[in-house]
Image 1: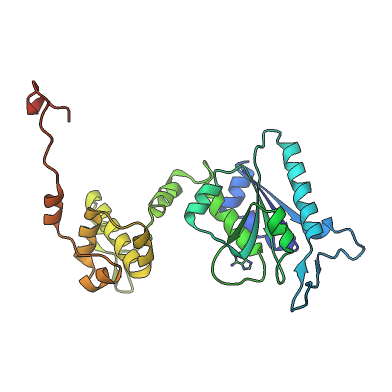
Image 2: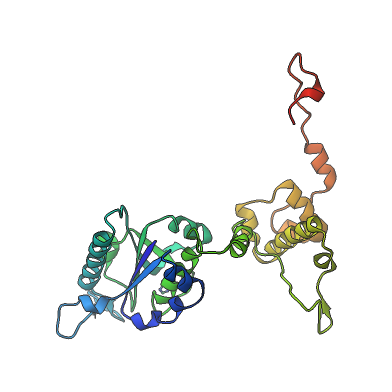
Length: 286
Ligand code: ADE
């Protein structure tokens, strides 16, 4: 997978891609990252990348010429070095874009080539939006000084999903996180720190009980901190029974949920279908 980042501030990228998992992925050839200075694609003596807005108003607007030239050169270079390249996505980072989520990171991790344009100042000339980019992404409902940090966020979140980037221990964590729930509480040694003890169940060695406790805690944490996640994917009946054990009826109600008890599970169980003729019930496949 290849990322090309177009920016007015290339030095901002010197740190984040040179350590940890992203650096490891680069050195193993699983991803490649190119940083390009938009100013290198200006044509005037002063390397002007921005100008006053037509119609007046505060702030400056990024000129279309250098951005178009930078994207076109980057696409040509990527195709020349990889003749098998079928598709490139050209993404503008802007607070006006689609909200970046884990599901979007998963989708982007299946793409071959992402070109990320870091917007700046009051914005970019509208013709970049209309005629050059294929998508616009925001990393949250707040305004940053530019698209550089959002580009780093996207490269980081997408890279860890590229096959082979995470080791097996790391990807197990990924799976639980991708479930749509917040992560359960984690503890490490010592078992008692300043008088605060690790929950007994985690020291019990009972893997089934640990898995049940973790699921219950993930559900409870999600209910308390991000009930909106439970609205988009409502808990199954077994999960609701687990939640009912630890959440108050008011907490459940606030998230639009009804308490559920183990009897509900028995009631919901369907009667077994009749056995086909000529086969006795204990001969049925399991
Ligand atoms: N540029 C400035 N703020 C931004 C945001 N929240 N997301 C993406 N790009 C931005």
